[in-house]
Image (cartoon, rainbow, N blue to C red):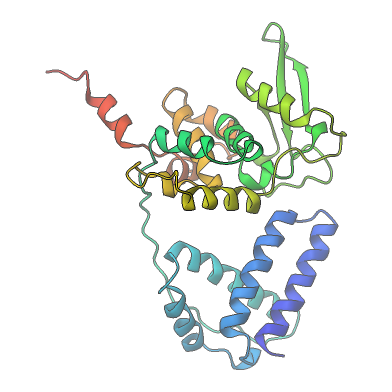
Length: 294
């Protein structure tokens, strides 16, 4: 068995798990894309003859064109595949892996003007989806799996009136990676308006928003158009995933961390929230020191 055959066998197994709702379909789709990359670079090697040096040379080639964090994710999938091959008896022992360090430093968040520029220059349905993520903190893969039936009203015993909530992971066919990701997300007035507009006329089981791939394509087209202003700080860094980081940074400036973690579906006390999601931009830095005096 060569590496390509091992990758194909493993991804077929993962797809069976997704059909049984034991793993999120979005996770498997991402893993399938990574296995194609791995197959292109390492696929011809016989599984039992794969060595650390092969992986190290492939890693070096990938780092010529990809960010270290991307390559590390691909290495993690390869490690998972080889561990599975050992468990299934396809391989006696997996080879040692090279070490890849990723700097734990996040770039500054693009300016609010950069986000607004993107919203104004993509098609309406994509702008709605991107803004909805900014207002709710949903991840792109959560957003693309949301159905009409996931939105509803709930009367809180401690709060007068009604709250419009969006259920994430509440359906049997909407699995989440961790228990904390199963949650009810409150919608403010603007998010409710987007929801009503996006769901009007659709059946309960219809998906509401475009796919992640479609949103990314729309943003790339906006950058390639004549209307893009290169001088606008950070606009070309905006991605669908960055909408969730915008949300986290805004909420973090006004609410305790445990509130943000609940909204984002992070476990209480998780270091991931501040390490990877709470960011700042230059304008926030200026505002923070504007009124300081001795």
